[in-house]
Every structure is written in structure tokens, then in C-alpha cells.
Image 1: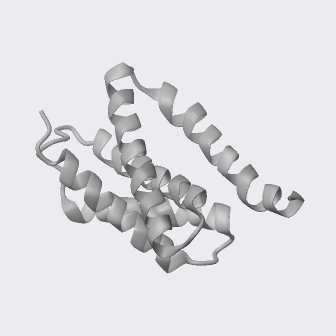
Image 2: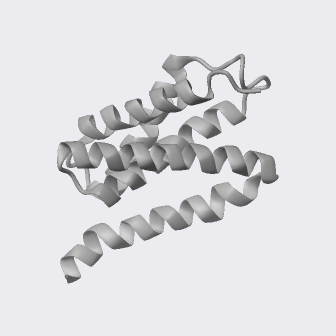
Length: 133
């Protein structure tokens, strides 16, 4: 239990705290809704990917949430969010966010798999947010 606590639970708690402390209070309520939606989409996609591949579901949900936050941050900084969305950018942002989260939580065990799952998250977020307001 002690090894499990050190390797899985604590990094997940730290990642959730970093997202909650640094990203969520940074914008007004409307932006937080978009951020929370993208994090939710990412976490759900990561969890489903973890079930399909037989990996740790909680860890994959954290990586998916990080990918969703990365995609949201990329598109939040653009002047016209809806028209400037590009599939390549969203996929790469998702892959990058998931890979970094995987390196932090996993100690570089499956970098390519993390990038692939993050890219899937970025693609799904792009598909759901393509025709926004």
C-alpha cells in the first residue's frame, strides 16, 4: 500500500492540486466553464482509454485532464477561438500535455502511449468544440 500510495495516489493528488490552484482561478467564470468542460472531456477520454488498454484508469484520467487543459490553454490565448482552431494544434497540444503528465506521474514508462492517448483527447476536444459560438 505504501508503494502504491507513493507512485500513484500522491502524483495524482499533486496534479489535481496544480490544476486547481494554477489554472482555475486565472480567468473569469465563463472561461472556467470551458476549461472545466475540456478537462472533463479529457479525463473521461483518458479513463475510457485506460479501460480499453488495461492501464491504470485513474492515472490515464489525470493524463487526459492534463491534455484537455493544454488544449484549452492553447485556444484560450488565441484572439478568435472558434475560427482559429486547427486539428493539428489541438492534437499536438493534447499529446504534449498528456506526455508531460505521464512523465511526472509515470516516470517515463510509456511516453509514446501517453502521447497517443493525449492526441486522441485533443482530437475529441477539437471535434466537440469545432462549431462553438
